[in-house]
Length: 156
Image: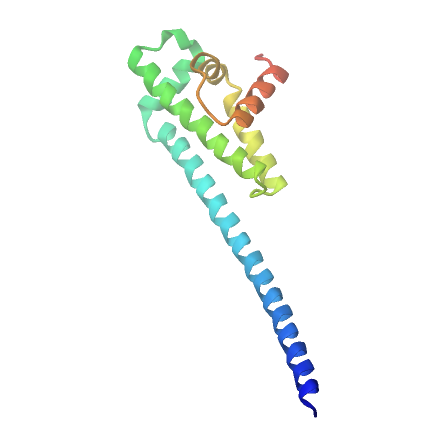
């Protein structure tokens, strides 16, 4: 075997090693992406559950949310502040889900599930009023998405 043959063999082996390394890295990236998506979904679930628990475990917040739906103008100043904090948490959580979907970190079927759940929640009269009166600051795309939803689905 000549020195030239050994050089060619070395090039072939190093090329093969590069291909094997790239395949290994692709597999690792795929596994990492799945783990990140799974963790992100778990965070979304936990965040949503914290909001639900704030209503179910705290009679005052639950009462305020119901009162806001029945008569937003009847809320006391303290109740209004607490309702606004609740509403902002809901809109912010939805924004996080929206952002994850828009950045391809959330699969279509999961997005559809989250979207329908949050849209039902923010479609209540009290949530609409909060959005239109307080004009909370969020990402422009998200704000446009909410406004488009409100235009397409006027209150009943």
